[in-house]
Image (cartoon, rainbow, N blue to C red; front, side):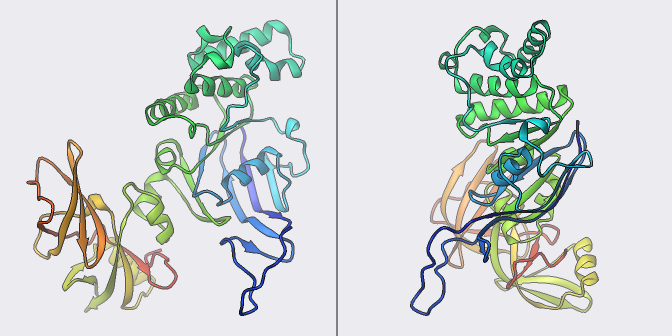
Length: 388
């Protein structure tokens, strides 16, 4: 039940390693993180407004700064620069216990010698709450999470999913303003992750709080978040709804990170026939859709070499202008067939409906194409989406 404002948040860790020189006298580069005189910049220029009761997901590869950002919000990491406001109040120097924030960790962090009941009641006992009130809150949270029958068990007698429910229960009994979750499902198997995702969605509807959720799993990000914050090397790449970042990735990194299987990438050209834009690839030209025409024209984009992105599900085996490739592998997925095709020396993935298409065997030639509405056009040098 809180709004948050992260304004130019920055985290710098001291660089304790000795600088090594390469043969050319340049410092050795071990990562893509920015290294300054202050040290290694793990998070830089992080700006985000989070509305009351919004569910925000921070997503990105390992080492991108998402967990560091979460820990700065929690107060577990000092903020090197910028301001963190909760309900308009600057909290940079406020102790974690005074921020009215609860956190669920990847490792559950339960006390092994305590029962489930005592684990959940512990933060309330620290707050010196009345015993009757503690009992009421613990049992309410247990009922919401479906763990009432486990209240007298120790954590070692529970499955991974049950332990994670207890960890979430311990966080929500306090009715925190903000609930932080740091990769809470990453230790669970695939079936249990799917189940717990659904549980978190239900939980979100039952408790009035603001969620900030960290994951490296783009499926979790797409299914849970009102908005997704995609990070790379400590820098925000794009913020938007799941549909926005899927339909309109701001750059090649976002395009490749969001979507499973990942987007197909081709070398192509952006050409102009009169006042109409088209993409040229493999001897064919595909005119882009009217909305893309308008955005490219508004940005005064010139004809140029580009990187073309097309998602596997947007490639089709039916059309006039066809690209030719050879089937290396096909996977029958029930309602869909996933083809791995060699085209122009690269691997291309196609997803086509089973009912509408006959199966093409391995080693056979296959023709595929796409429409102008699904073509994503990126600058070859910067990787930026030329429409935006």
